[in-house]
Image (tube, rainbow, N blue to C red):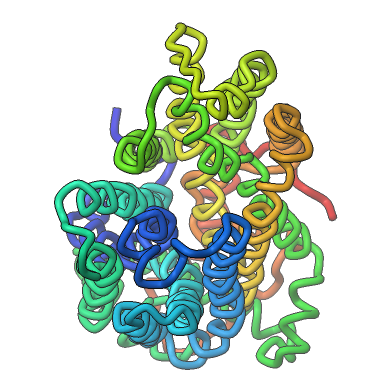
Length: 539
């Protein structure tokens, strides 16, 4: 059994090394996202960072506020970066957008590295790196989805998430390594993890320069000759191959359908299009998915796991960083399993359903453990328990990270990058990406207060939300596994198109009959049961 979606017409040649390497190369942006999100917390805990930035003479309340400000400036940058980028990517292309994001990110990283103990420069650098990250988190998943064949699109977008979690894992471990091996007398200890941001940024810059432009964007610009060249290069097929003709015909059909509506090129026209039948439900699903991704409670686990580890006798900066590093390992392994096997075998819909229900179980247990053992009180009293229930709680922390990345972490990005029509794809993904960063900000800022006021009830709250998420996914999220990007309109209930392809010389005569063949194939696959459609959301 192959590790790709069944029920597609993709020839085996399109699942080639070139498309996998391209996805890996541009996903250096994801490594930057993961690394930038995870390294800063451990770096702030380093003795040298506290000394050089004057945090060692501040009260705990002031340190918490400063830490929150550093997080907030980054998330504000990602929010605005994702919203402000889509006009650039629509006008100048995905390739130039990725180049721009890498340059902006590297500028922010340089500012942070050269801050020399000045907190305002850390704030400025975090905000600018956030702009670059927001830009990349919008463009790169869309670019990968637009260049991928249907049978492995989920896997290739999953590479983006693998490197995101891999970058996060490196961010966790690099702080542990410098804490153990670098003398804290000088600034070198905190400069190393800060400067390492430049590595994925530089790699993304190089990859973006060498990457071919998205064929679908080129088709939007009416540059069909270059689109055919790029598509042939990516698919590693002859330019007159039946699959190339069919893919270009599908793109042409959708572009002409979007153009036939009139006014779709203006911002007002795009807003009107987003509110139309078959599109408003897609946007609703995308917004809810990105909100739910953060409402799984993953930030609660990340925040509270050091206290759980303390009750097992794990104390000190290095040992806490060591234990947290394995949380990053568990999440990375989960993403690898998701991308290599789960996303194209189990599918998006079932992954969300199973991930929500099964993922809630560790959260229920951790809530029960905190309720009975009261680890914060035990740790404050200097008492450390080594019973099996405490060890099971630690296992549940890792298990939850594994299940979360196996399902909700990766599927949401794959789903939102593939479901929108080409005419409004970038603005829709911009909105859903900004929504993700907004909810990340909300949850991360409210997490400490929820733990203080609700205690163990916080875990029960998020476990209950996960059960509700699974129920919602069962009723309202249709399956997209194996479908082409152009077939999403039929899946989400867009009114039937009339007229088909209207001539023109951008496609040769052998391609003009492909639209009817695609229509027949889609209906046959649905009726044959090779694709599970699920229940369509009607909003």
